[in-house]
Image (cartoon, rainbow, N blue to C red; front, side, top):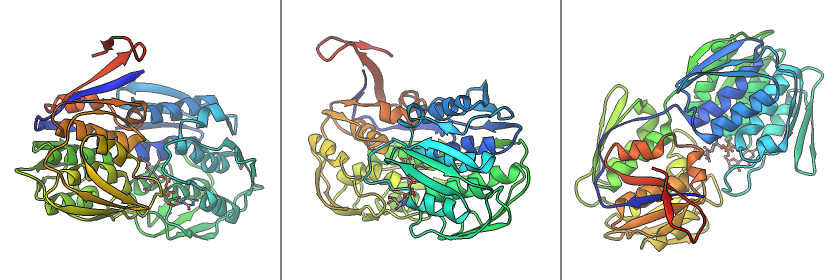
Length: 431
Ligand code: EPZ
């Protein structure tokens, strides 16, 4: 089992370069099977486990995946032959359900085991199924384990999403881009990764307009071809480093970002007294003195991202005053507050509202990562706290943060990954 050991109290200083966006990669990789050709995908966070699971699934159905360099792959999907993605492929990866839309778009058929992933509360896929059925597919769910989708051809249709859903928007785009006629998705998600997927599909010859607004129009095309595409930088990884800089009272230049994607995070950091300077492809965050309080309400993009809520809560746990955080997307995204309490944070949670009473400082303690972003929050807390913090269950963190130890170490963070032979034995450092 691996852990992170962090000795906190040192302000982060220096420069860090952000990797490609995980949530864009997880939509674009399955999209590459929509053409019988070769797609070259650049600026990919190749070493995060979610991307590795995706590539395993691609090979499982017959695609050839070649590593070109540490952030580029080529997917040759000319010989993709299977429309079945089994449970051992999907159990660790929530986004595996994107193969339903991609396989429907390619073969008109899909048999995909229900996904696993972080537990943030119920994660229904009713809006995905609604979209597929409106496109003409017949969907059956076998004892909540397998989704079987069949279609005698897909036909464009107007689809109104009852809930703004990133996943449903992605899945419908994947299935619709080769459906006959026009599909209009109303109340669509507007996240940067939705726009990135639309740009990737259009590079393959699709006809998608309006991505980034709440109405996306997709005119189906007969064939799609290969392309070369570079994925956008990861908005949430960038935000994580921005908050880490502020929470440790540091001064960090965060490179390879799109400042526009970070607006809600920058605004809230400035409200807490941080200094945020924007450049073309970088932001610089510094914090002098103790952060001030502020209120956060997570919303679909361009609102404050739910995937930044745990990280920002660490800053507020150290702020002067009381902050209110309301989580409007997920019903179970405050579990990390129990871990923060072990470090001295003073947070009361009532349903989807957390009241955070700032304390002067946090104290290092043994904690665990409850999910991907909760794990990122534990790293920030450990770096900001005095003393030593041990983080268990770091597999969650490896799902979405590439080279996380190196990146934090390079800006002064005292963090290392260790392997424990077993709970009682000496900790063997793995560097
Ligand atoms: C994506 O999850 C992201 N994952 C999540 O990021 C992110 O938290 C979420 O979008 C919101 O931004 C990926 O992109 C791989 P949703 P997704 O469908 O698509 C409800 C991370 O940390 N809903 O937008 O699963 C749902 O219950 C991860 O990188 C339905 O009711 O989220 C939730 O309340 C964690 N029916 C809300 O919509 C549906 O059919 C938003 O979910 C689908 C969703």
